[in-house]
Length: 311
Ligand SMILES: O=C(O)CCC(=O)C(=O)O
Image 1 (cartoon, rainbow, N blue to C red):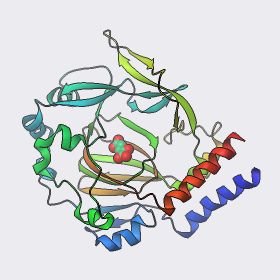
Image 2: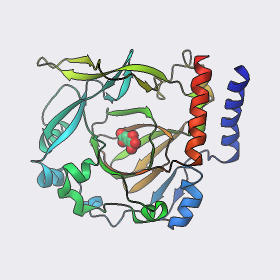
Image 3: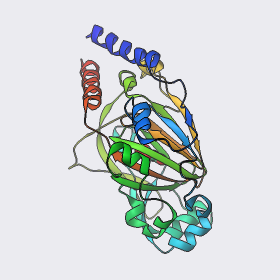
Image 4: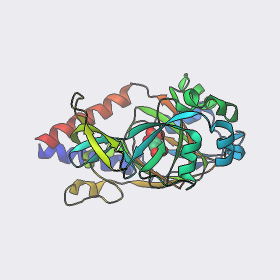
């Protein structure tokens, strides 16, 4: 088993040497679809694209004041947690946020500090909430990114709207999507790790639970006893516990800040952890990944890591 572990670590190191970049490169404008497929989607490498959505009215229009006036009365789903961590490991639980229905203007009141509420608020429902919950904003942007849709031969599966407080954090995870993440105002801080770093990233299996705020303002953790256990990453890349997870020392996280007007291409299956400036507004496009040879390769890597971790 030790020799398998050693080979897995070598594969990861070879990927770093042979094709991965040491930082996230910038492109200066919207790329040609075929070239983008060849240079970034196929090799599964992230990049930041500047000047890709300068033409969206959202870039100049989307102030908190404008959003209040345009969609203030709409009721939207908001993730509320005691500590900013929605969908994250807390002790021996995988804890999801309280999903609260609130008017957009009450969320803005919290973000603008007009009312004091305990808990951390994050508009982050990932089910095309922009198209489904906030259609009034759709004239301010495009419903898909044309060169990406041409490159992949399909439309996005979801277009999501993100707005949250500074201490709202998205814990480290990966998705089966090619992700184009557009920051409209403020900035987002990503920590990215390639799928080939999987041998250095710990997983556990946790009982799912959900936060619920009591009338006195305190949060309790409610077990979802009839749900299956969830595999999740217990490590916080901002403060990794290297005593507990010594292998993480060998991982090569990339730290990248995506500024207003910039678009991050976050390839499928890359691990990511996300923070933001207070009141940052973003929109992202999730294109379902191709379940091709690349997927099979990373699945195999995943399986080998699980087997060696439990041996
Ligand atoms: O912006 C965030 O907080 C998380 C984004 C994310 O996890 C994603 O787009 O997959």
